[in-house]
Length: 390
Image 1 (tube, rainbow, N blue to C red):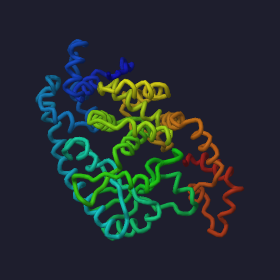
Image 2 (image 1 turned 120 degrees about the vertical axis):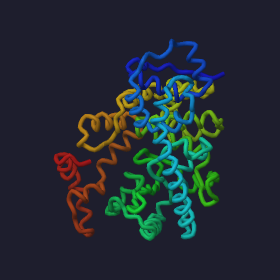
Image 3 (image 1 turned 90 degrees about the vertical axis):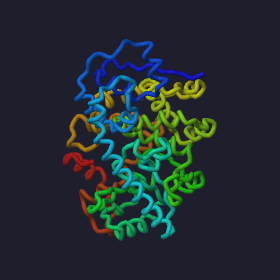
């Protein structure tokens, strides 16, 4: 027996409501159609803008008739986006194979996160999901090897890796490289998420790896770890792009071993993230949630966190912690703090007392004087706040 959740979407514009209806599975659309009157006239230009913001045009264009919801000229307008996406995903697939194969030849193990690997895994067709870059997870000890290899392959680091103080290993979780000739960006991860406390080790993720149908050189996290990563990643970004939620809908629809997933979520304190994801998927996409799983997850903060995310989905904002974003940055920072468990909040507060690699940018000191960052921490932190640095 599956469980469903009702969300208050009365503030959603009708164009967003129409887009959600088009994203639902055929069975879910038929069930909803029996409960609700036909959609009113909507602004189809605004509808297209929303589809592009949420990066879901492949899923909508893949349903050619749109279940009678979408006019043919609107589907044609989205067709150009889909063709461009197909070419991009083909290029990303080839580059992912080249990178993973090259890393393996250097003795660096890697796991593909999201991108064309996830598209092939969940949708069976790389053209049915969008991706702007490649995400690869490696052991942190192999970061220098990976960096040298990427430079050899024509990539440049978008920003220098902040190795001044050791906190960078857990305060950030990836660095970005761009090949300016191909315009492909690669994010090299050594953690799944940043500053969220305990995570599975790379060895645990590697033991649970699964092969990717794209290439014999590409591996992905196993389904349990992959699900945990997707819900924590989506939660960290406030689900402001519905593309991430369609991944959850697709993954749940394929069937999951909840007996393996629930203990994993408990161990790494991600039950609330999963609850948020499943409440949103059920309420917006009508993803069927097994009743027992729904009851386990509904006991936590999942429903409340789902309500918080509705505003991000409705307002079509790109969430950022950049202070120049003003109110968006302040609201997002408050949300990120609320997302943490009590233990994580205490850990976060204590970590603020430890010198940060960002302090070395605000007040550069010779390595021999790095010990001074400890007594100077309050003053450097205040100086950074005055300068609106984070």
